[in-house]
Image (cartoon, rainbow over all chains, first blue to last red; front, side):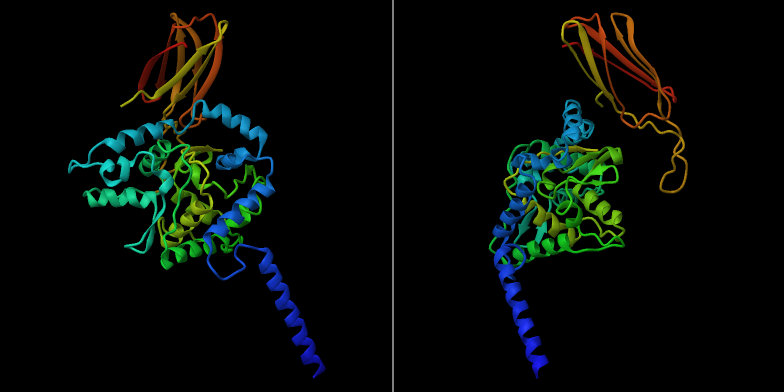
Length: 288
Length: 103
């Protein structure tokens, strides 16, 4: 009898502790999905952790975390390695398909300066539409074969679209639709779920340890990480898209990567972009 | 097709600083593709920068230089508006040349 009441008491105390904890943590601890509070808490976490970094500098990934690297990058930006890809994307973008239409016809404002609105939630389809997906759908609708999601042509096209949107603040909207909230929540869960042989989540590196070294690399903060996509990575000696970043991250933690543009990746891109709302588009980026 | 060479040359009066980016696969000949077959060697062997008929920079390259190589150097004796002639030859005999105005 005594034992049972003791257990009762401890569990009550525990519940109380959890409750107070929930009170102090605006994000995640409550079961209501609140993207606005999530984004606020997310941004506050990074600005508190790195009080010296200017808010808009978070889009520069590892360069905002390390002074030496920042100097190297400024030099590199005078002659950025993504130039060839950018030029290819510009040519491809306005070149008509066999049926006479072009990418310009698939996008609002002819595709210029709209990168900050992607990914968006399509209420008709009930799913998240990323820029890469929209580009391939545009091709398929016009009788062209889709491109590989991970590099070359796809990276060139998104590089050009990002370049024309540079400086515009990320502006992801979550419509008043339970499915949109669910997509956001699923993306968040994917981001914080540990997986793979190394048992890492996305957050292990990009929330817990930005600025720290992982072997020779300096980890980028998750805040603003999407704003710089696509990127030229010296490590890859080439361009990579958001899809490439996600699949490579997964294989690096020894998990089995999903297919590019699977629902999970689209949701995580939606989540990550939303919580970086307000930060300027800086893509295409160059990373070590 | 645009030129495979990008050049930016700026002078501060005395010295001229030159930066160049060249688009080239620079395959060493030791790397295998996804099917396990060797990718044949394909790299730039000679790179030259000429100013006023005189070589100001020359490089003998091999397979150890990275893809899309970047070069930066400076030299003395050029004026604003002078022309810089840049050219490369690769091991398959392909070449490309371009000229750039010093700014």
